[in-house]
Length: 243
Image 1 (cartoon, rainbow, N blue to C red):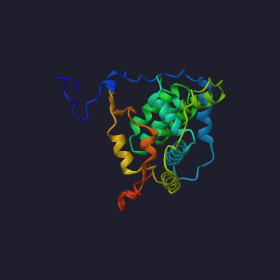
Image 2 (tube, one colour):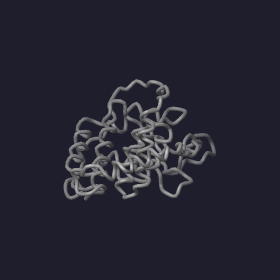
Image 3 (spheres, one colour):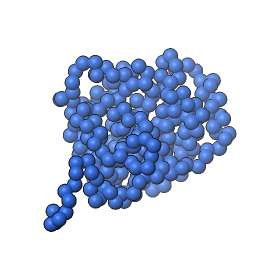
Image 4 (cartoon, rainbow, N blue to C red):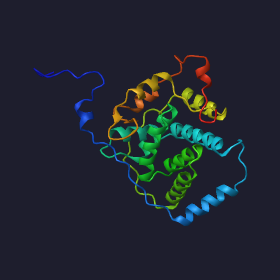
């Protein structure tokens, strides 16, 4: 430390963090009204799902998609691109949104899924469809489903540069635990040590909600977490929006 320099207070962002610009969510083009109307009609006339209500079914499916995103072979690469690349990659924003959802930070997850969807991630758009359907916001749900379908038929741009992946995003036991919870109708859940890391992340400025930023989070931090210190009791049966 240079002479006369003030030590950084706990929780105060460093120079590199302070210089990072606020993230602005790109606004996707409006899907054709005809596509939205067709999807809305298909949803209304669809066969009943295996859960009692539409929002419960959406919550179950969203938990499953989150589990699959976090368990994908390229999830670690996506998170590292999000943190280390000069431009924010939609794949990393999609993964970071899934991590936030698994810690109960649904507003933060929605923010980063919106960024990813506006940048071309069909999976993030589908997560937003399920998220809004779970909340009973059917107009927004139909919009994001139409955008997801539109992205699925669009020509894909060249992928981001390759990073060497040395480890999965989450350990095998954590991924199995998340899938097991989802299949039992429970919300995805991360180990307390990883939740604590995410809770300490800097918060996005200039927004009404407290939206965590991923700066400082790496796949190394996520892959070292475990369930060894998980407290047993009622918290283990924490239900998601369906419970």
